Image (cartoon, rainbow, N blue to C red; front, side, top):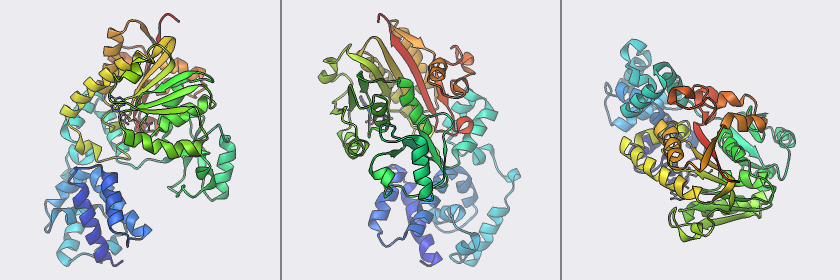
Length: 431
Ligand SMILES: C[S@@+](CC[C@H](N)C(=O)[O-])C[C@H]1O[C@@H](n2cnc3c(N)ncnc32)[C@H](O)[C@@H]1O
């Protein structure tokens, strides 16, 4: 495709994702369905440019003020993911001169917002919670793309075997540093046609997400509930730790998301999983299981701000009002799910958010209202599960928030190269 046509297609996709009315990945998929003529390299340029605009929107909007022509075109030019000489073939003379001037803009011309590229409310909140140097390190890490991590399905294969099998297909990987099941791939190879994928030996899953399933520590023969199972990323990992025995309920209010679990379950070889679509967290079907579960995971709906490397649109699609509404929902879901836990059983509350209000504050509110749940130290649990350097994963600086070091799992992109995750763990007293 001629550079001019490619820039025009890219401009249209940028315009659509910036409406922010749907998740960016859905907008991109829809665009590709509507434009089947686009080849794989063209698709990559379009998608990567749209994501680059979302990542550095504040910087590019600032630079775009000096240009002319439609704003989405200016943003697409600034973020265009191809060599400059290719791009310049698509530009008129004034655009070329303007782009050269933008490339020459130095730090002195830029404000902090043009570096962190966060909305003000979020930049301020993170600065208040972390201090500015840490906030800036986090913001910089969130501007990078994330590595592609796999979880090896240990029901089917061992990690070194899968690693060797991938190497034969020219896919290089290294063992993830913390998760015993993880492989971090070099690059972003296509996986869906690999035998290892179709037979269920691998699933795409961030290392941090694997650690949440590990922390639940479900065993053979247990009764376990994954309360917000969604498409079942963690359900599959938990089912494997149970060695396909016992009973694993996958609850979610979204039948649509649970439907996406079905083909993954079929590949995985798990037959102990029972997906159940519920109306809400106080659904009658849940009440019947009160006090019966050995383990309950609440992977709560959240802002997803820990996943900005993958979903940069989320920072523009969330507001303080959304956060406040989620906080109430998170506590309600956690409190309802806790009723399922039997005496002596374990409860894990997790999010992929980096905000204290969705994490420590919800855990503290739940703990204050539920003296029958004893908090467990996440660092000690992960150390017992042989996770290397578990203490550094578990909020070593938590004392500032008034809790003992190691109380909570706190994963950060800039520290641990995972998505941002939180987990708190309790044991129900009386077992
Ligand atoms: C963070 S996502 C879960 C991701 C999933 N555990 C995984 O590993 O792929 C949160 C899920 O909570 C579900 N949810 C929202 N409200 C809920 C409720 N009241 N009860 C149960 N699930 C709920 C959403 O539909 C969504 O699938």
